[in-house]
Structure formats: C-alpha cells, structure tokens
Length: 408
Picture 1 (cartoon, rainbow, N blue to C red):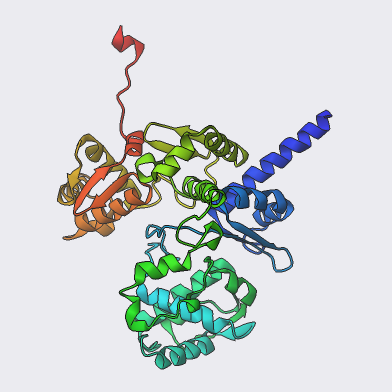
Picture 2 (cartoon, one colour):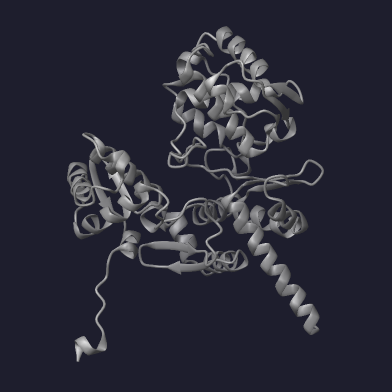
C-alpha cells in the first residue's frame, strides 16, 4: 500500500473511533445542534454501524434527510443512576411528575408538525383529565408550569421540538406566554430505545406497581438470543455473551468480575473473548485496563462519557472525592451516618464552600448527593444504610510520594 493509502486508512480508523466514542456519550445527534459530529457519523455510517451491531448488538440509525443519528442502546439491566435532568443550573433529576408530563407531551406532539405552548398545554390538560390514573394538569399552578417547561426544554435539547418564535421559559411566569414550535415527529418516534413498545404489555393500571420490575424487563427483552429470557442454542449464547459483556464495558465506568456471571467470566478468560474485547477497544480508540478485580476502558480524549470524575463542575462531585479518602481507608466500609459526619466536618472547615448546603440538613443532603455520584461511577456501593468502597475507588485516593533525597 502506498504512503497516501496508509494515511487514508489511518484517517478512516481515527474517524471511526471518534464517531464511536461520540455516539457512546451522545446517542442522539442532530445536524442542528452538533453539525460536525453528525457529519462525521454520516460519512462513516457503515463501519460505525457494523461495529455497534457486532460488539454490542445496538442499531445505529442515520437519517441525513432529517438530520439526525440515533444509536439505539438496549440494556438488560435497569440503571437508575442516569435520570433525565432539568436543564437548569442545579441539574436536578426529573421527578415523577416531570416524567409524566414528558411522556404525555411527546404523545400529543405526534399529532402535527407545529403547535404552540398554549395549545399543547390544553391538549395535555384534556389527556390527563381523561385518564383515571393521571393527576390532571393544572396550568394555574406555578409548580406545574415549571415541570411542564422542564419537559419541553428536554425535548428541545433532543431536537424533537424547536421554538421558532418566543422562549419556552416565558411560560413559567405566565400561562398566557406565546411560543410557537416546530415539531419533528420522526425524531420523536426514535426517542424510545426499547425493542418492545409499552402499549404491547397490556397491563391494568392497578397492576403496574406490583409488576414494575417485570414490566421493565419485558420492554428490553430481545428474542434474538432465544426465547427472550435465556439463550436456547450455542450460537445464541455466544452472541448474548459478546453483546452483554461489551454493553457493560462500553457503557459503564468500570466492570467488576464479581458482578459478572460464571459464563461471562469464562468468556472473558478465553482466548477468543480476550481477542474480541481487545480489538473492540482498540478500534474505538480506548485503552483497555485489566485488573484482578475487573476491567476499565480509558478514553484518552475524554469523549465517550457525558459525565466525568474527578470533576469540580458540581459541589457533589467535589464532596464525593473528599469522601473517598475515609471510605477507602475503612476496610469494611462506613455507616451512612459516618459519611454524613465527615461531610459536616468538611462544611465546617470550609464555611464559604457549598453555600447551598450550609444549613441544618445541608450535611445530610450533600452526603446523599455525593453518594449518588460514587454509586453512579461504580466507586462505591450503598446498601442497607452501609457504604463500602469498590476497588476502582483506590485510583482517586491521595498517595504519598517520596523523592530520591528523602529516601537516600
């Protein structure tokens, strides 16, 4: 191969790796909000789609005419650490009411390519009033308008909704605000990432609470691996092993051996399994770290995640880093009350820090928020009011460094 051919091949490999990591962090790309990233995925669609399909069993949909790329991630386990978040400075997670309004709004928006914020609110009022289970939507209440706006702003961030006249936030202060929207109904249909639609479950409303875990499993059940519960052939079992392991590796901060099944551990110990994982990491531009406790993928460019740790972008992230030191030092972990006491001491030591937590219940709230960060990054486990550090937490503790002069 000529020198030019080598350069072109290297450039293509770099593009593919960049596109893969970009989609891992942002599974929904739109040409309007991320033109450069969308163009990269569009140009390298075929090899990128093949990589995701082979290693993770995830489908990549690229629609150049409509200007979006959607990586359809499917997980067999349910992850509560990645909630939808309010697009405000506090980045608080969605509560139940906001999720309800988000779903109802998305359903009502499918009726046409344009609407106004008032017309949509009226349709949501009618829909919730007609449903015996849902609380009616009351636009006279400020809290309801705030929740409604949070749901719409999330849809705007996805590119499914675009304000062409007026601003969505104006509705918080007045329900008479005028906002005109353009609706991308095609993209709305792509937002749900599940092989089975909720309408197929046919469950009575009063039974949902009792069958919640089973219903979530039914949404993500994939018959490609057999009967949808467990693989029924050797080929299906190998396919499930490859996909389930790669989904964990490429979608989680760290994967511990103790969390894997015996079959998954055996697959990773085999020559074939090790080669597949190593090649997948290399093609995506990751550095694979293998330890006695498990596996971790390092992205040298920090592109493949929507959240980082360590990171001083929030008070909770800083508090999480501070709590790691005593947590790792405790061989058997600490009680949650002990971590709250550690947090209280940090707040007292730095009275000008974390001002929103400087109050009677501030230490408890900050400790809880910090624990959410640690559990989300799989650095700690919080169970039965007891917290223990996972092995990867040691990476972030303070180490004593001795110079040659000190040791001589």
